[in-house]
Image (cartoon, rainbow over all chains, first blue to last red; front, side):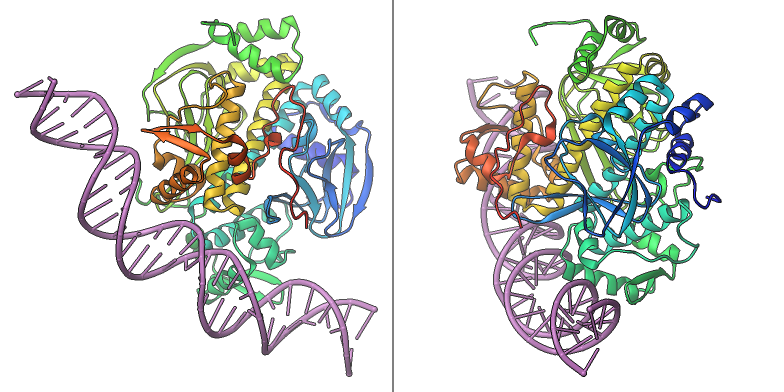
Length: 256
Length: 256
DNA sequence: CGCCCATTTGACAGCTTTCAAATCGCGTGG
DNA sequence: CCACGCGATTTGAAAGCTGTCAAATGGGCG
């Protein structure tokens, strides 16, 4: 966090080390990985659905997201990635990219050949387990998204997403306590939450009227965190933040 | 498949071996895992949301599912597990169960202590990678569910789920070519697809009227597979079936 | 200053949910 | 073997949330 311009792979080593204890040899093996760096423009694809993935990617700067497109042409955004995320570990072992990854803003990524990742995993079990852990957390977040889309009302879904972004950005040192900018269009937010851009707009305004958030142009800031948490039925347990004492902020209502 | 009552852990070894090449020593290490067997009644919990998971579970017989409950009390089913599935590898590395697992029918499971799984992963990298692979496929299926719930109409979602179950059951040798029984109530199907049980009932009837499926009591059989695939916008690529030549059955309509 | 795209608004249609009540299916007990 | 009781499935009708279509507004960039 206090490291201004770390070596490209140092961020990856630090990230994996947060999940599992790594020895010096593990870190060295990570730092010895072959890689290339690339800049991608906003909207540009990093991985394309249907292709055979050939590399794993670390997001160094900028934002990215994963998406899937259905037969009718509609798309669903499945995850948002913020700086520091290991973006495509899912394709490290699978032979077929079932979804695509795109840059949300212009971004800098570190690309590592898939084979090198596999070799690293085979050689350094602790690193393999850390990478596995990373994908498990990713899956946990996706479970929460699925639950949200399936069983929470539109306004709740949106508030929940805003809470999640706030917590994750703060954990990554990318946001101050009270506000952050979302580098996403309303259409993209709508594709995250499974609603129409028009309806999303209404829900945004409704959260603003409720006094939970404020907006200025495209930037959203949180006015009343507790209210947003309540409106969003939010509990950060599913994020599995490293070294985070679990506190069910949400009271268990109607345990049924 | 032609093995009537294999040793409890043999199924696990076979399953993992389908994902990645395992050496004899890898198999031996799997077979040497400590375990206990347990029968669970339909509806009974195997893992409970909020707890610290202590074991990993292999589903030997019967069906199970994972679910999450939201603040209002509604639940979302996140996955259905069929015999042979490794059910809770997600909790092998995470310290907090963000969802629960329940038996759908009465079931027999093999329970393996979490620590033993971790030790195995550390000792046998190839096994670790196979288990990782298993969870990646699980995540891929969840991505498809999320996409379905977020961006496909109710009838399409249901048809898609029926297609998925058919393909998976067939791949597991649990279904003949043309029909299978779904051991799920309509309410459970509704909780999978993010709709009301009442609406699910209407969608089931509508698929029946369309001539895609037939029903007799609680059992569903497929009358016209091609029609069901079309109605369900289904393409099995996301299942990442081992040794499966990828064929986009679905024509790309409106690539946009 | 003018163009283009994202955001807002409005009016409406339609898919889904709700609430209630009628049926059906099935295991149990007589 | 048949009646009874209970939960799952169906039906109906009406309300509500969300999507659709069209058009106005706003903001940023060349």
